Image (cartoon, rainbow, N blue to C red; front, side, top):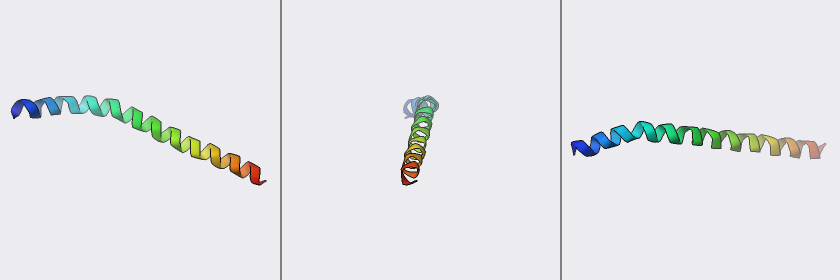
Length: 46
């Protein structure tokens, strides 16, 4: 059991370090995409 918990605790920071930038990039991409689509719709309304 100790080996499993130590492996998980050692892999957790690496997993967070790899997942965090991807999630952040996806969030920024979706948010910017929504802003761009909203701007396009707003321009077509005028």
